[in-house]
Structure formats: structure tokens, C-alpha cells
Image (cartoon, rainbow, N blue to C red):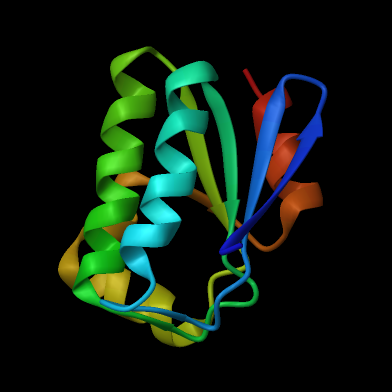
Length: 113
């Protein structure tokens, strides 16, 4: 399994368990995430175990973001490594997402008005 799912109240926390999100793993991860996104509107994606993300991984995150926001939901990324955060910043992807240091602080963002 590429992900681990936790539920805290009405927020789904998706922990990506693969160290590398690349062409070998992204389709499996996406296959597991997309049905969850269809059924909920509040998500945290925990990337704390991910040290590398390919362009396919970035596209998967953007696709997830678009599906969640299309139904007025919210998606927060947590646990971004400096390398992934820098890549997302340079490409402009980081501007789309709320992000936080960890799942606890990410959950607090759902309480903000």
C-alpha cells in the first residue's frame, strides 16, 4: 500500500508512505487517493516520508487540489522536505496549496476562518 489513511473528525489525513513519488509509484498513489477525494472535501496530504517527487507527483497533487477545490473543499500539504518545497516554489505549484509543518498544525488550519 502506497498510502495510510487516518480520519480526524471530518478531515482525511493521507500519509504517502513511499520515499520516492515518481513514475514507478505515482499511478498507484493516485489510484488510492482519487476515490477518497471523491468522497470527502477536507484533506491533509502528509509528505513527511517523501524525499523525492517527480513532475508526475506534482501533477498528481495539482489534480487532487483541483478536484477538492471544485467542490469547495480544502487540501493542505504537510511535511514537505526543503527540496520538494523549493521545487514547488520555483514551479509556482506551492502557491496553490496551504501548507504546514506537520499534521497537527495542518489540522489547526481547518479551524481558521
